[in-house]
Image (cartoon, rainbow, N blue to C red; front, side, top):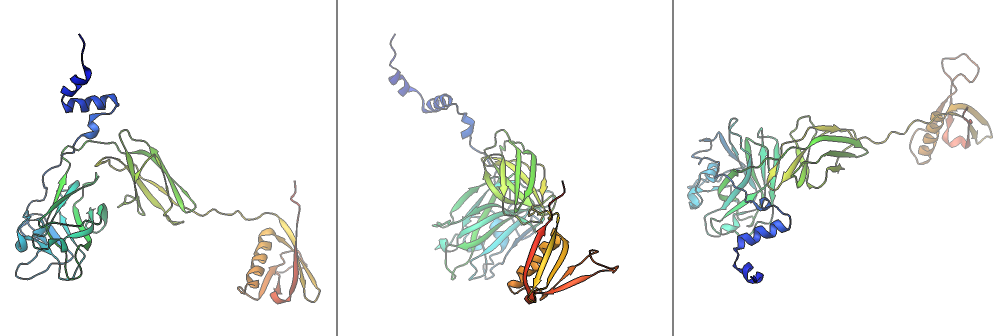
Length: 376
């Protein structure tokens, strides 16, 4: 029996063809799996401290509508002036935060922002902001950053996802600009937050090693199966809190050149696959240092000829000779004292506690260094 393969393929369901294509290409269909998120984990707020412990903001605008901070978490997206948070007129920046409570930490990986339900709402809508997490309400970690979010419709809800594996107590939306002018102000109808409901696990990197160099720290770690990239986090105190200094790092090495010599830095690395981020790796520390030049060895006869023709000889170590030369060169450029004391040590008649010969810069005609041949 002859089969018309072209005709038969046209009859196959598109889903089967997609699976067939992925199988032929050696790709797993799990790569294309849709992440599933929880519903909004914020219980509708009825005041700034109910039911969650606390809502805070940079400011609130009070008129007959009272644009209180909690209204951005009250579950109402299209309530107009009655159900929105706004800052005082003329403020085009602002922030609002939510405290979930010490016993109710959340690992947020998605949030939504709904614009002000009011005519010309785009003028009030945020344009640039950061979404931040904190364990103590003071030290904040930027989890997501958005810019140029324009052309908002009235009461429009936009969704934003990011990778995060840390459960924080506090979350904040920190707005740095809006779409309107100084005549407008920050105003938002609603903010929602979600966690991953089908969070797959990914192992944390291991064997993190940090090696300090001159104005750099070299990091290396063991690759994690399933990781597509890595995030590098750093702190100046053991145990954090850590700040992300590099994200989407491919490979298992990284060179941090944003360091200061003499400062000890503490690092952790996380593995990332899509919106999923692993826990922190082991902590590794390093202190970058400038290279130390070993002191010169050996001795030499320093002969200083004065402008009177008098020659003075001194048997000195090379360290002392180089110190004299540094003084002379510095004085030639206008820095340093006018005279220099050369220690005669015990090379001359004595005994004395010490003997120093002071030479005057503007009396020196020439000087000569005769270094001894090192003993074999």
